[in-house]
Image 1: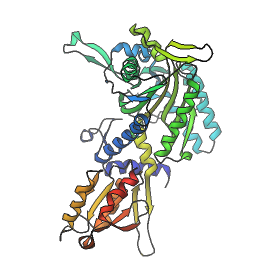
Image 2: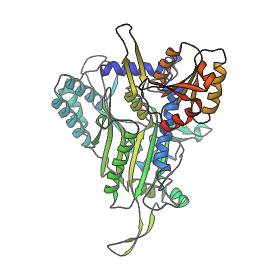
Image 3: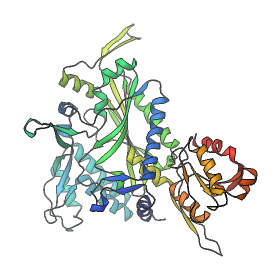
Length: 485
């Protein structure tokens, strides 16, 4: 299937089968805001829980927090978001449509690449990154004009100058308007970790190196949000900030690059569909940074960032709050034979978008399979989601809805639903019910038939191979649990 066709089919599939809906759709929706349906919310929850399990429960030196969305406004002054959290934007004077500059140039590069000139496309992207690093707004506009990049609405190159636009959402806290305080919806979850560094370190009794993990909502006023749930104004992050001794950050940076790559493999993402992209333009606080990019149907795009943030964040919060953010290290420095003493820790960050991970898993799992034979045309849509992430682990289907089969099936349902999420359905032919479960990503279907009433065995069907086997009803739970683990 062509990649563009697959992309559109996947978006349609997500709505048709209850994974993702446009927010407020009955009122014609709200751009770049989406709601998760019954099976999307289960997939999202499973991915979040799997990240937490592998990040927190399987690492004795990583603990979790849940920081509030509202934070003191000085937090964002200290972090630099008030002054510098912005994107270069440009307006078309004929259509009055506003664009992010990088989106315009990236789209042009994709267009050039489709003509077969990958080198020219890459050269364009390299020049854009160079100009962004220099914060050369005039150069960015000249690059747009030189490459005849047009507005998609007016189809003209009548552009304004490039300027910066802050991406934070502002709001007020206070019951009376004149006494209210202006605050921001957090644009990232990391700062909630940094301002709690001392509290967490003391109460969890952790020693350097250790990490603090968090999942939660963040908000960015994206001007051009696109590509379904890839870029949204309200999204969820899964972040871990790992605090290390200054001078050891390079080795920990490489360590977490490897660990995060392994985690992606465990999601069922093949190595050839991902790549590391080292940042050409480093943030002012970083001494190393890279992205893990996945090859979506619309190209390689960032899913996770790994950054060596030095001591910038804790140092800034120490300066703005006037509260010490230092750590006393009792370990002995082999060079001086004395304790390392007081220092502000350096930080290695791993930050992955939960919504982007959902989209990555769905993109990798979605398949349209032609099952036609000489006698009959047939096909199926299937989500090959790993069993541990699948929204529904087991569908229990009585062959017909009478003669004692539903009662026997519900017996099995009562046993299984204490162990994992199950689905029960009686209506429609058994073949159609199989197809529906394939489309939902359910790894196993159990059919309860008349033989079940005689010998307590059932037919279990495997989603990916469509093979069926007869097993005792008492073995169903163990078989599914083994696949989940």
